[in-house]
Image (spheres, rainbow, N blue to C red):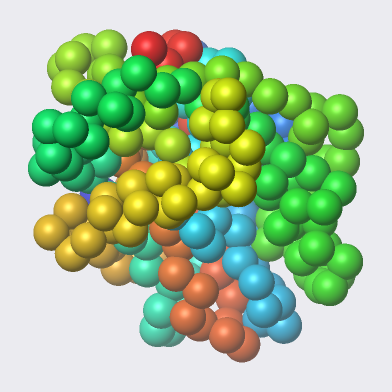
Length: 244
């Protein structure tokens, strides 16, 4: 991950910087800015109670080719709170027992946006409770939200060839061949293990801060500890390959 302070980035400038690292992708469940189709506004208004990205995840791991990188820029931040936590899923994998690693390497997961974006998902419930959406445009409810794709629970980085945990209870519906009820203890154990203090970095935002991270290795979690204040971010994602 890389952090840059005191930037003045228009949506076009942020997108142009991201495009230096690969083709930009679009996010299917939120409306982009009018100024640029690849820049997504992520806004939590003061009256909103729930936030976007408030659980440990990698961005859109339920897509056939999830993004390789995410660039998040702070337009407006609360006076206190609103930090983002990052977890190193590769270091966490290295520290698992040999027996656990051998078991997990043979497993695939069924990844789906329905846990979050489906008609009964977390954000559908949030939209019903709060008219103030965490991102402009609200949630797109469509057949895309019910889609499923198969990825390994443990992916191998295409450049470094390091293995890392890639599953989560928010984007991984179930382990292939298992029920969700059977899968959840494994998914929850891995998330608890991966988010132990020794694997986590905390970034404190300031206006004009830009964070860029490898979405193939890092999980992140946006803290929701700034009730009554506004937080406004712009997000760009760089297209990746299919996890292997």
